[in-house]
Image (cartoon, rainbow over all chains, first blue to last red; front, side, top):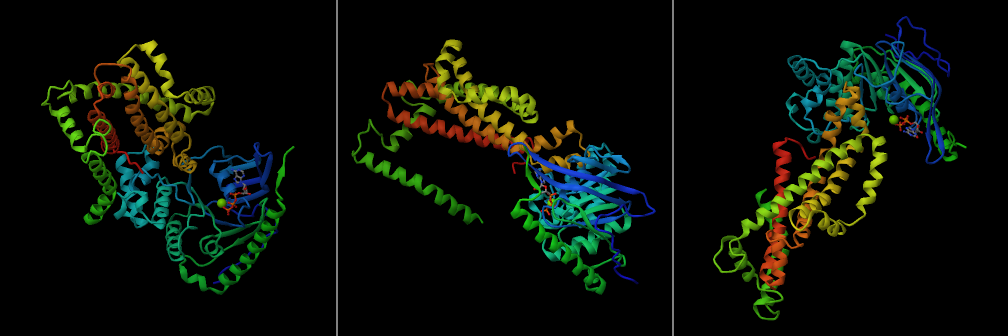
Length: 291
Length: 260
Ligand SMILES: Nc1ncnc2c1ncn2[C@@H]1O[C@H](COP(=O)(O)OP(=O)(O)OP(=O)(O)O)[C@@H](O)[C@H]1O
Ligand SMILES: [Mg+2]
């Protein structure tokens, strides 16, 4: 077994040669946030291109403020690119939709609905028959280990439980694409590993396309089929690494020598960018005054 | 657990009890004249008389007659305030473009103290129920409207994103996400509006109607009946608390909504 093979790609990522068609394509994306009130504009992304093949599990890492969430919001349909194309199955994304499940950092559960009703929210909006989605909701809650809490309100759950509900809520719609923005960032390390293993277990039996944002290099390597590193703002792709650890994976790969080596490399790279971002912030680069 | 609640209750009750004791001391000893401040037991006796009758006073046994009259005005005015305030708050909170036309006017008119409307209301509606209902509607409207508007407009955007990405359409988003998310602030607007309703009820009845708790309060000043004045203050305050509790109960239990 080769373990982790780090296929080094030039700093400006080309569309990867791959036999599978791109599920998600970012084509030369620029995203600028303009504040009329302050008369400033911030360039979050500048000419970024990235292709994500079907069934890829892409983990995106990079310094804080480099535009990771912005990228996810673009494919989520929550925001629009200043220029460039965001394509899903070759079609331009204009709005959010149930074909892209989203798990937000804070879970974003509906606080007035109990766990079961949160999970059933999607199928209800899609007008599915009650018997079918109820059965499925139970199965998914069983899978994430929350069936006994079906009638609890989000406020009565721990952070980890809430994230599991959020994942279940996104999965029940069977979205071909799953978008996750630092879903486990707020969890303690022990819970986080359990959640990662759960996510892998789920992913390994349906292999949907996943875009997963994290700050945690270890998490990225553990989960992803690919790890993409972004530069400090304005975000570009710096490095695109294929993470080919044996599957099914569990926590034991953390000690794998290749894993440790690549992890150290990626960590150094992100650190460099974080330092650059900090220097930028003090010089206020990237944010310019508009005339 | 029960002991904790008992202790909490004792703590809360200690100050009122102390006040009543001091009140009893300074009045029973004759240190303060009875016509300025009657002793607690006189107030209690007056209230018992007011509720159940037993004397030849005009108000004796007339609680229900006065109460029903006031309740009728409060309910009518509050209902008007809510029927106007909630839908308007929802529409303007949901659609900023419409809001741009109407909100500034409402904001501006809000700076006119409710009491300033009294003379005009008297001209328009005459002495009595019309004026009271108008003032109550006006007084409750602003808090209901503003809370609804705020609740609808400032729904956590991530909840809207979650709703959309789960398949809610723009139109279903209103009933499935926006209104439930805004419910706590709508409820607090209703509670505030209800408390204003009782305030403006008294103001409306001060214009000289025959029946109503506020009207009786004014009459008892004319007769210098301090026990009745203090008794009525307590009754009106108590009714405010009871109506607030009932509404909270109604909203949470009957409508099955959660107030968190
Ligand atoms: N709505 C917005 N208005 C103005 N600027 C924004 C907005 N959203 C993001 N930005 C700016 O765009 C840049 C990228 O933000 P983004 O949230 O994508 O970063 P990120 O990589 O997700 O950071 P983090 O790791 O801290 O979550 C930041 O500099 C931020 O200031
Ligand atoms: Mg982010």
